[in-house]
Amino acid sequence: MVHSRREGSRPCSQRDSVRTTGTAPTPPRTHSICMVSDFFYPNTGGVESHIYQLSQCLIDRGHKVIIVTHAYGDRKGIRYLTNGLKVYYLPLKVMYNQSTATTLLHSLPLLRYIFVREQVSVVHSHSSFSAMGHDALFHAKTLGLHTVFTDHSLFGFADVSSVLTNKLLTVSLCDTNHIICVSYTSKENTVLRAALDPEIVSVIPNAVDPTDFTPDLEKVRGPKITIVVVSRLVYRKGVDLLGGIIPEMCQKYPELHFLIGGEGPKRIILEEVRERYQLHDRVRLLGALEHHEVRNVLVEGEIFLNTSLTEAFCMAIVEAASCGLQVVTTRVGGIPEVLPDNFIILCEPSVKSLCAGLEKAIDKLRTGALPSPETIHNTVKPFYTWRNVAERTERVYDRVAKETVLPMSERLERLVNHCGVVTGTIFALFAVISFLFLVFLRRTTPDYLIDIAVDATGPNATWSRLYCTEKPRKKGKPPHGNAPDGLGESPGR
Image 1 (tube, rainbow, N blue to C red):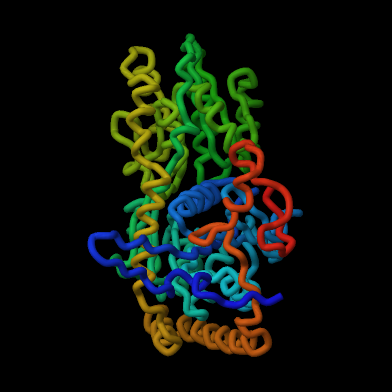
Image 2 (tube, one colour):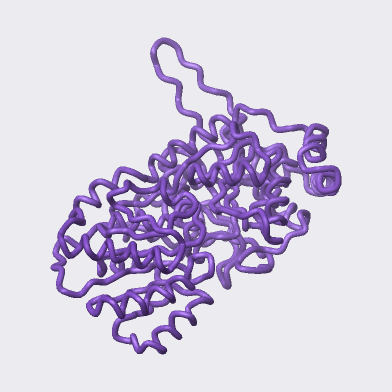
């Protein structure tokens, strides 16, 4: 059965604003937002957490939000998460490191169907590493939708992979309405890499839910000192440096222990160090951690060590500080912007400098010069909240909704002028092919024949009306049963 198009189901950016008389306030503008990235749950990481938490806060503020990612194992089709957050797990092939393969064309039929079906007005892509995110930006512009991009990483300018990624970023962002970076260092990096106008780049940091990361106030400190590391065990996180720090610090401080959470290809280095120096009783490797397990690991220690070689923001050090730990970290990327000087010890990315930083933290701990965990938590708690991030992101959506999406002629001109004659011409050709492919799709399956989904979230949300009479359930557990719009969509697990 085909749903008829109605006034209330049009994209929010196209709705007529409600005019009021007298002193009555104008209702806030709502948007129909599609978050797109290759990286989402059940995969774990900073980008995944950012997308989920931001989406939940935007839903609370009255916006309609859906998420589009690729299938993860048997997690396919459409799922519902907490508060009716709808997630499309598309059957696209993964090429490398959870990023999908791309031809810039094969995803157009699926994405166009979703954008029309969900009446999307703003497409918000995340991560420079996400091929699906770049595809969504490309197709959204062809469809005439407003676009926003959030960059979560820092890149160099010299190695081959960085050169290629930066060129792709230049193409993707040259006609994107607005770009968000998570730190001022990240903004400077992105503006230089993609040759952007700084006026269309905003800085909105990551955030932490302070109720999830609280110190253990009943903990009694003994003679043992525990250094906690929670990180993916990859080269970028400085695991090679950690492999040099552990034996040197353990030899100098007999009471020192290391607690390491995380998984990755560099784990073998830590296992070899532990075996070579016979440190099995002083170095614990916990492997991969679920998000809800991180707090319990953090509160076991007194010092948090971060050895990253590059970071745009580093949410881990905020989580550690919220749990009351003294942070010792490398001085790279946007890290110096994150915490006050008295809660963080900044070091150069070298074994010698990081060992000196740890020694300084240990001396402070022994002499009682460190602030109490409760003091650190209460100071850090209001710094980075998801409610604040959502409010600032909402202002970005309001801004781009007032802008005009470039028509095809101007888009082609900007691609050639901004990206260079060779690269610009190639992607301008892709843009023309994509437009012709869209014309073909609209001829074979016109927009009016695509069923309009019933909104689970947003101004016309049905989720709360359908489930408000159900028995109370555990927080974060969505109900099971028939999907609200009767299209065979299953709730999230």
